[in-house]
Length: 408
Image 1 (cartoon, rainbow, N blue to C red):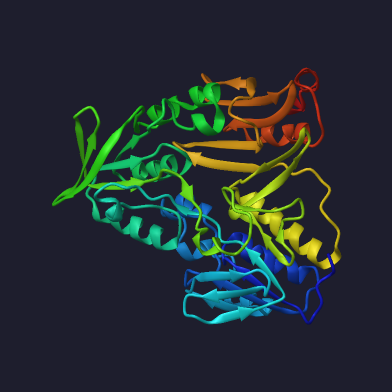
Image 2 (image 1 turned 45 degrees about the vertical axis):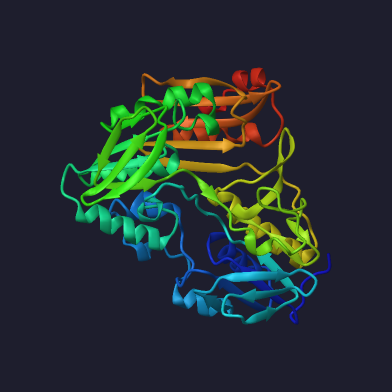
């Protein structure tokens, strides 16, 4: 990989966290050439996690989630093409055709398009609220604000976003009812045991959680919605939030020649093709962990930021990242904080090493083939931070238990 030169032009498709952090990182690495930042939303780059965590609760104004002030945008020297989506990528020509039929021709292209709310296929799906971007937030905030105290609000999906929004609804005087299709929320992400330990959180916060829910339809009626279940029952609600996960917008890349497999497949240097890279949510990349490499796609804030820095450094210096990556995510829900380090599989063994579900705070270690693969905590942030070194080099579970860094 030759180093970027001042005569190069880098096109960044996606003006969210990953795209903007890449622009910042590229300038910090000393790149003096042209950068064009393309975003399908009309807004300056902004941070998504605060939408459900701070903005919806009223702690922040939506503008406080902005990542780039007008001054920062100007100082970046980037040309902004906001409010227009990318429609086609020509890998050989490193060019991007936009929806307004304009053509951007560069020397390098970065795909940082992120993910969007996964749609449902019910009769009223188009009328359901979602929360993935700023427009979603403004709409959802307006709907919540229009409802009277105690109004029933159905939340389809008990995962991270669903639980966070239900928490905000409760705080704003609504009566949220969380509908989870699985036996327990987060079972697919955290596994059988950990999801059991977290199950009481909703009840403790006086939020109704219904599991094993099978929806047949969601209908719009004069006074709200009716949710129909496969057992013949129904549920009236003043509003409905669809929080059933995310999907990727890969259709515009279908004829690009890139390898698409639950994301844009990249090598260990985040390269999808010569002079074309993908970072953040959209990238299916090689996670370098202490217990081995794994091809994955992760929708974590921290991964997007690390990808941006790694790619900028690689394109400017030719030096590939060699350190292990420790993914991190957090979720504030039902008055508690869930935090995870690493990328354990749901089938990995897990054991609580500090605290207990009864205490309402705990730290747990995941292991695979007796090697530590992840650390999960409930409202125990200090112990989580102390345990992070367990993921920076291979360590057996027995050795980790003897070392017990969380007790320091």
